[in-house]
Image (tube, rainbow, N blue to C red; front, side):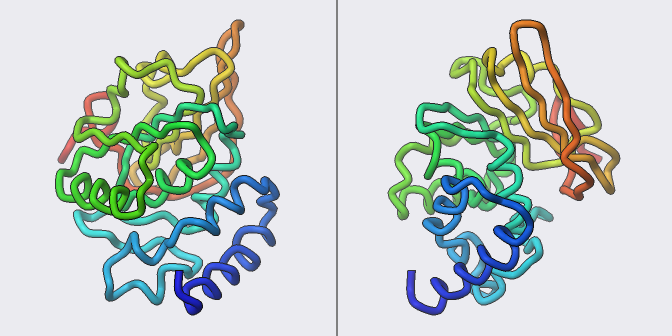
Length: 216
């Protein structure tokens, strides 16, 4: 990373992430390692470290840095974990996860975003990210069960098929609510069943697919 983006990244971490209560050193280190400006268009690179989401084409966005950090921290990842991400988008969230977890499986339903993210992962040599072009709401049964599942778009309800692909002891974080606003829900699965905790309000683009919103 050049000096300018290094400085912008350091400022982002201090002002937007650490100051809002992100304390996991693994998460902070992962965010520091990933060059966020490469996950947006050239025209938006200088805004990449700002405290807001940015458009990435196809009516999709790269999430605000704090949301990426909060969702990552809530998964409580270890270096042995296998993570399923629903909605690759720009690839930034998967890249951050890949700096902590053993392997990240990420699914994208929009072909142009899928291709762009895969090329960027290869360029950055993030070899522990496995990509798939598909409907993410059906999960990735052949590779389950997963230690963690992260959904980066808002669902009308929690897809049971994704809960089923979560290992015992696994964690999932997903925005659930209406088309316009959601609640970030953390799910923990143990031998007795599933527990839910609210992490607060949020706003994501719609999760489209067989087990979520249908395309209008």
